[in-house]
Image (tube, rainbow, N blue to C red; front, side):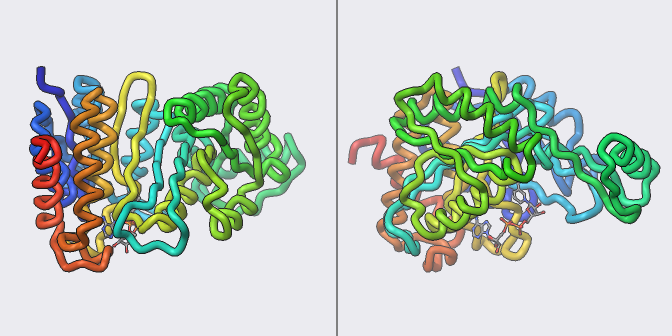
Length: 359
Ligand code: NAD
């Protein structure tokens, strides 16, 4: 039976890399029934909302989505569609592998890191109070009354909730994932010395949950030290487990360590739904020029195939990406080549077919 997949092409380079991923998935021969749903800028223009209800309803039916990046206005405008999707579908775990691939020039020895990011809480939860609003004034009064702390009256406020419930499940997920992948160390990043009651919950809950996994080592380090060590000796890490905001930043950092955003794939997973998307954004600076590297989206699609238990196809796509990168001929400008997004995708599709046919 065909897999029903919701495809959200997204904004900017999203449609280009989505088409590339679709071409490669077609080459695997896995039967997929695509339900293409627009979200983001075009949906806002046409339907007045960047995330119309039909998109969530579609994922409700398929349970699995492949998603291109969606633009979020900075500072003002609509709330992030990405954050809303993760929250509405309770996709609490972001899984972002950073592996050095052959033929890709990097500044470090080969790395194989896995960032696991809590996806629903923290400063990213979207609990915000606008500067000058009545709500912000009320919150300032309450904070003053409860803690004696004065917040300036021209401050905007973002709330940082981190719960034991939200942390327990992501810690268990990270350790289970470490076991599944044969990894031996989980490092938790935090700033619990300053944010005692939010990062403190994350740290203490992680340390408590870790005791159930005696076969996987656990270490906890402050996020600033973690940043320094990632630049200095990234090979000393294995799984890096982080609250939402640090995870956002550090997964881009890890992408940079292993060849750039054009290669960094990701999955957002919950108990009921899964959404696969590249780490990168909509890259408006290169959109529409055929210059986007399709690998991040294609490897996200390979992660999706694995989740659908299409392991042979997933392995073939990953092998094909490796072959094309190693060949160095059909690669996009970010990798030092001159191929367009479509040309690189065609080469990966052809390599996928030859791996699957054993030739
Ligand atoms: P970005 O990831 O879009 O771009 C950062 C840099 O990386 C740019 O120079 C870009 O050209 C380059 N780049 C990104 N992807 C590439 C690819 N596949 N091939 C080659 N080069 C690539 O980050 P940004 O500019 O900070 O964000 C642009 C928009 O994307 C913003 O509106 C942001 O909110 C949104 N965004 C969305 C998501 C998502 O949908 N999950 C994630 C991150 C950012």
